[in-house]
Length: 516
Image (cartoon, rainbow, N blue to C red; front, side, top):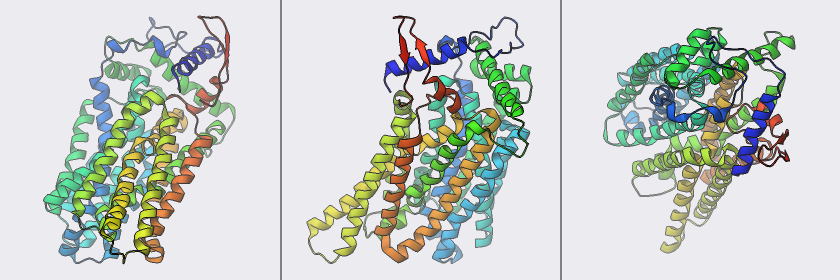
């Protein structure tokens, strides 16, 4: 998306607001004017960032805890087998039990946060997560180990939806995309951290270190305020004003933003009431299409093989016949994904969500296809004595896996999470986030269990080939149905892209295209 199209979008939004017949409600502070709502009117130089960063860390560190939990089995699996004398099937359930807790928790996290609040729910889940890690740390048998994995997995999954909501709702629109991308960075960073710690520290100490992250979250939340959007949704206008002032700073004029929040909440609720929907209808009709797109992408993401490689990186490298240090290779794989996510913070902000996701998805598909071809050739010609050919095959496979992990972090992994936090109104946001995250972790569980079966039936090449197919499907859906919404609501942004806008500078009409 070019600069000219970006300016056109803002002119379209301002044009629609200036000509809107809907009456905006004046906030409780009489000096503020709700009739002049513009994104470009804000002055970032007067905005306080450290309070937003505090809220961002409180939410996103839950993803770090989740990434740490996901990668826990890879460096510690051999130690767990020795201490508890467990089979490979039971070892698989050490990872799968975490996913079961995730599936159960994700469906409940959003609705609970709508009842007790984002901040309070995150504090509760951080305490439960600490308890789960303590159960793992002091486990005396495999049953207690699995129970602890389930408990902290449940807590982390309960926190996924409210953490996304909390970060999206306390962040200013200028920084929302960046702050939400940090969620994926934290999740990916947790994996190499546990790889490094688990490679040199006994597994009990590794589990104990895992409890420090939710403890830090609890402390950060003690100094943070509740989400202004949640407070406004509950009709607590003065509390919402005070919370927004805390997150933006005393010198920043929050009048326009508080007006936007209030108007968005009331418009969303009014539409819900006017259509006379029952309380059993949980989403508005205009939300069904973007909800299906966002939730579908969340379900397809684990099928690309991302989390199978994350969980069992060391075992996969060993199965492929490499003699190198498996844990060191696992650390490199995890760090490459983190590096990709770190770069995506800047690329997504500059080039938009759609473009970064498409480039990343195509790159992922090609990388996995290269790795698949290398494994196919290795499996069928493994008796060859050509040393040069063997080294070339090894480099091809490793290069494909490395490229896969780096490219998936460039957009394919973070963007679906960003869309869950941006596309939907407060009335639907929590429910859709819960559905998306529940399907995401359910897909993780199925992929983990099915991959072991596929490997026994068709070999590692068949498993990698299936990952390539799912990546291709993900790419096709993103290309056909994901628009560029510039960080705005889906149903509010798409109509604006087709508005005829009069340019103030050259007084000419511009027809905006939906395909940006």
